[in-house]
Length: 277
Figure 1 (cartoon, rainbow, N blue to C red):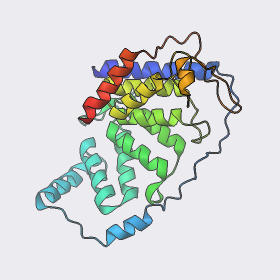
Figure 2 (figure 1 turned 120 degrees about the horizontal axis):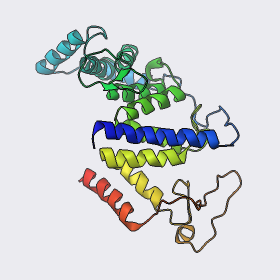
Figure 3 (figure 1 turned 90 degrees about the vertical axis):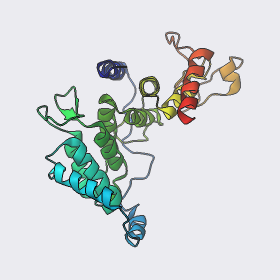
Figure 4 (figure 1 turned 180 degrees about the vertical axis):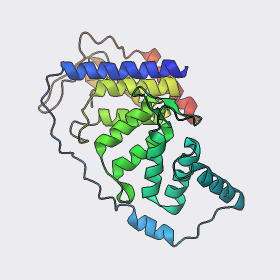
């Protein structure tokens, strides 16, 4: 699938989600996350251990690293060079603050930037998708005492997804599919999550997205694909799908035309199998 078609599909997913949020009458969710807030020090003990080990890098790789650093020119050079420099700083030097800075400069580039491999975004900027993905992961944990923000992490995954990074689409979908109040500022939207899983599977052959989308379609004809749980009898249609206290209605709406037929599910599972083989 071409880049323009992929971006059009992502735009449709986001537009549909925006319409659902406009039409929704749900009570505003609490800003309190059910997950513990990272302190940014969770990796300190591991980093301290790694500091005691020798840094082994062969001469050829070292020469490539030095070339990347020189080409990056403190964040002003080509996006690929700065991304590679950030990877080295994060993985080898554990200089997380500088790595994050370089990820930021490559995730957000001006429209007139001539670096190769940049993707033009809807907001009029350009982006290097892998940088957005890596920056999002930093935001989700605050690793190395860098900035922590679930909302910014989500927005960065969404930006990476818009730019065609299917791993970013998968993580964006996982956040949307998580239970309400799991992430501060991120609205629970399993419908959009399913659409993103399906897109990452079909457009990018992302194995875990294929598997997740397939399992969501195995809910049967009476249970919504986005339901968090389903009993075998509910899936078969021999037991009533009940709405339990504190739980969203799991019944499939009459207007939902998606079918949990064998063919699309099998296709998704085959994509997952082929990826792993």
